[in-house]
Image (cartoon, rainbow, N blue to C red; front, side, top):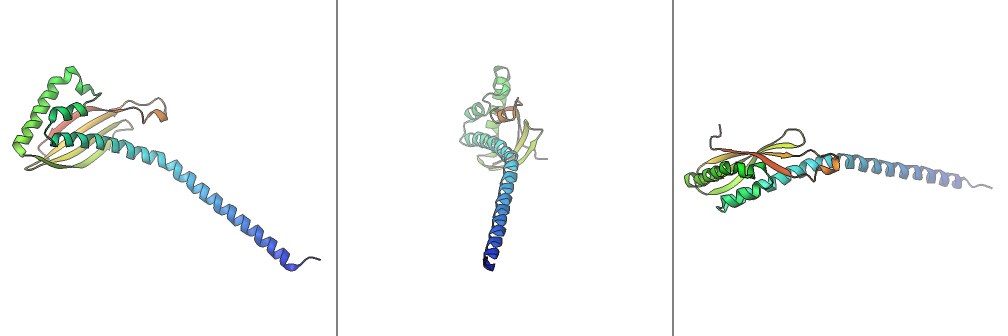
Length: 169
């Protein structure tokens, strides 16, 4: 003889099992969806952060009053650091030295903007604040396109153009 509560117990058990499976599927789906979105977003953050760190290190060395060392570090693996561009870089270093004489010491800097021209070209602008005047710096970086998506992060960013302007207009 079957008891009435056995049937209710079994139906609650089945309903509970179905609900647990549904919740687990929902959690799994949300995890997959977040993971699918993360690489693109984190890659963008990583590439921008890498450039910001590099530029910040450059400004920090300039602030300590050592332009040759700052430029040497910034131009590592850059065509601007080659012997053919040496005279241009020397002139730029002299101009940066003049900025310190004309405007005083470097106080700090703020990022103005980052423009991405596709996946492998970035133009980053900073405002370098001297005691008497701000100076707008523009850096253009290029990264050789990867043959596979996994290689994208291994190709280094190379500085291909550098410019500063005391006129903010």
